[in-house]
Image (tube, rainbow, N blue to C red; front, side):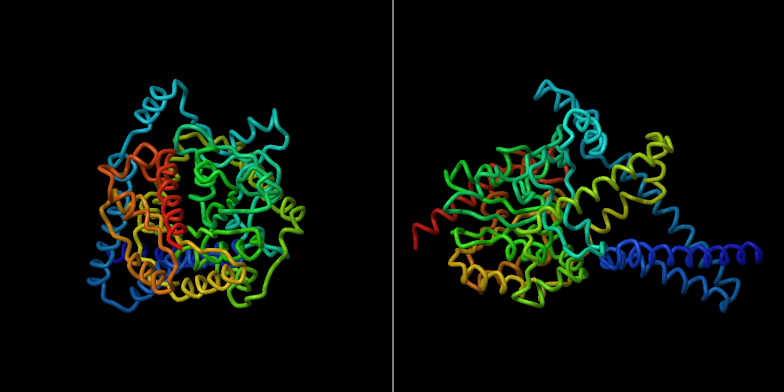
Length: 446
């Protein structure tokens, strides 16, 4: 038994050390310190294992035995839980989802990955691109930090509803008809993340397009996937001009404060926070942005080919995902409290107030609730803090949770197949109606 204990804790020490080095490499070298917040809990876990393994050299064999039993039991419990999440806790099976989609549309659910459809469509359209979020550049040591995608390109986005959404990007790489930039008056400028970007639906079903139709006026959508509040502030500083009457800022409760911590870790982005006059003048640098994003797409394609050449089948991919406890880790990331960044967020909002006032633009704050609020019946811990803070500053607060979802018999009807994701076409349309009605009412009362 003593030999077993010795081997076990020696192996644990080696594993802990290698795991710590791997986390350090990913966080500080691969991502160049740009995702330290993401890896924080992995750092804590690896250090905890190191402490336990070192402590084992100073305790009795009896205590070692109990400690080994606890660790092994915890280890197997995690994999049992992962098995439950992967195989037993499915909201709706993929087969049923495919059947529903085919019954409703007469079409087959597109099961390809984003890179697969990219390679297929590239045979016909050499100018086809895939969406690359600004967040992908956190760890890059570039002279500029892009806030959009490749300009004038058909851009493949995502698939939650059975088909891949694809949009034609404008002159600055955003999801707009390019002629919107030529309008003498811009009634609405939208700032946000993937929900504003138009995740997984085609025009005219995204928020910007629906608002364009409802208002019969010019709308510029500057949202982009995985954005956080600091990237959104940067976008506002770079692309706002005197033609804009109303700025609509969208806050997503599920990840915006989380993303803000990552935003603040990037040197260029941090300048937008600490220096009110800082700008990259990105409107004049779209060619450089196109080059950077195209380079990222090419690298992704090379990585995809490498993985393909290894001939990993679906079973191997699932096995690797299972070993990595992917579902469990995602669940823990989604459930952890975002008890940080409120001060930084308030400072960003103050900055937005200053910018919009200087531009003679109205400022509206839209609060978008997350899927887990309705699926798991959980309340977002900072909902009241954010609502009170916005109201204190006399900013119009448009509460989509209160003004729309609470009034629905089943809020999950407005998510793809009732599963975790962005809103579906009905969801985007209905919340845009609420937003437009609130702003219209507010303008009438002025």
